[in-house]
Length: 206
Image (cartoon, rainbow, N blue to C red):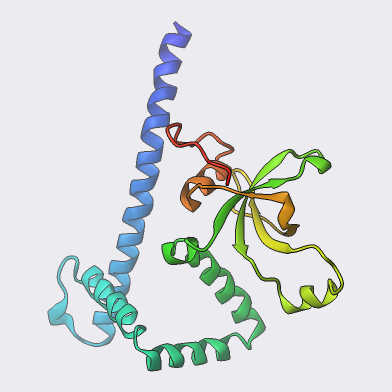
């Protein structure tokens, strides 16, 4: 009787919770954007533009305009100049840098340059770890400290399961096996400890 009652409830919760949480987050984001747009209308005394959903439309139009303007080299140069000035302030640099890096994770154009790989950590007793090759180059300070070393190092990000975090390590290239695995699928696999995966697609080692 107990199993007959609890099992369907747990199964229903596993199905309903992801849908409800996704819907709640999406709705909260839409309401937040709409509120920002309505506040802008009120501040500019453009009350005649106020109607249900007008704030969201204005914010979407504004974001589209910003993205379109950044296509022009002069606007891009001006943006980078302002960004460089902001990054001179320690607190702003930390907050802005963290938010920008988080947002860049959703940029597919950047993720295409980040290849998934298996990192050989068997000597440390950790087996093979899923990693993301973020760049083939090293910071200048690291390069200088390794002068004379014959090893070719790559910068690899090792995501942690069930956490928003991970480790950035410099690994010899001969310890890395590149995979034919998409960034999104690999991150989903790593963050859920392998629970979320597409069984029809197996990662291939080059």
